[in-house]
Image 1: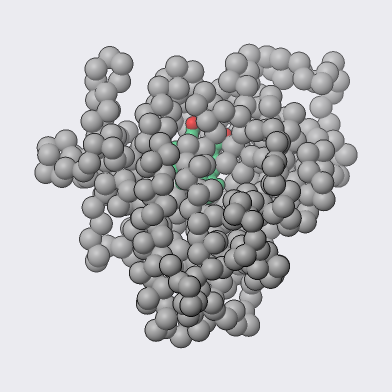
Image 2: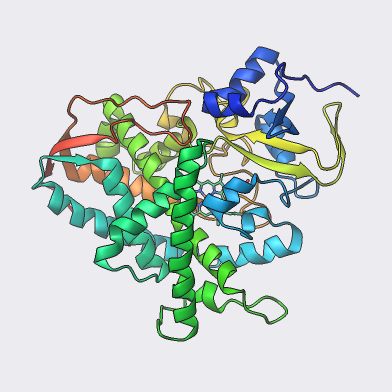
Length: 419
Ligand code: HEM
């Protein structure tokens, strides 16, 4: 068997935190290899990238998630006991419950709700000097997500609940202060949703039966038992909180429209599918989730390298989305590459790879793409705005990342054919 190339430094946790999205691609380039061994958080980890690597990583016969995820991620972002860390039949059962909520009808409904809240915001923006688009997107998505999930949201708590969800998402990159903020936000968010689960069970709240609040409160396992309140609240959160992550892609896409004006023109007048291509390219090109981690369940040999049981394996998602074996001119922003794209579900993995039903691929992927494309078309067709001087750079060292100014727009006005 071949020896897996090894990084020079003994433990690279701090390099990962310091270098962010550049760490994994940088190491691979330095070592001239698509796989390498290192230590992260004191444990041996094999880092891999590319389409073939993703295909192995998402083989549920070979990998398991139990015990793979670093504890801080559970404590702030995903919640303890969530489906992210489950395997086998138990995972598939839970995933089915999630996917039953994301039917085409319900996805379309969420898009309409999000556009309704966006429309209401535009009325406000017309009367404001400046708008920070990142903050506005977060609030719109909180309002739409809660409405869609059957979670009551008082006007007075919109700001608090929005900030909590963003603090949780913003906590994953390894900074201690952001982790603390995210953990605090998680505790408050969790308490809020546990109360809602209890109220739904007592019929003090009566959300529609097709909503996440209803489904998570009343779901029964195959043994007939309901979930404990904590688990129900964790999974209720997982069924709408990640929508807020879309705020990052939305302002990165707004940045792309600004920096490549020809794309904004095509969003306005181009082919019907352009909005979809543009959303896909935004998810491919811009960094958001850097990597995923799993543990080897059944030992196997891959390309002559031995993967032993319980080895931690890290798949570079960002690097796979820009891997030169799968993409022409990977570092250029070209929405047209998605025209009739027949690529593999392992080359394009911003929200995980493989199959949505049997594996861990993101349950909210269709939702994300639809909200993104409809918002980008809305920006291009329905409103005009100025982009004043500001710091629009985003750091690849920060995870997650976004334009530093939050993307400020001014002088927002509706176009003549505003719909
Ligand atoms: C899983 C990314 C939006 C719900 C995941 C995974 C990633 C991801 C990387 C893990 C894949 C893996 O374990 O290998 C994103 C990004 C989003 C987004 C980048 C938008 C910017 C959403 C939305 C929802 C959602 C809108 C639901 C409303 C979930 C759930 C899982 C998941 C439930 C767990 C799936 C499982 O373990 O089987 N997402 N997501 N996500 N996502 Fe998303």
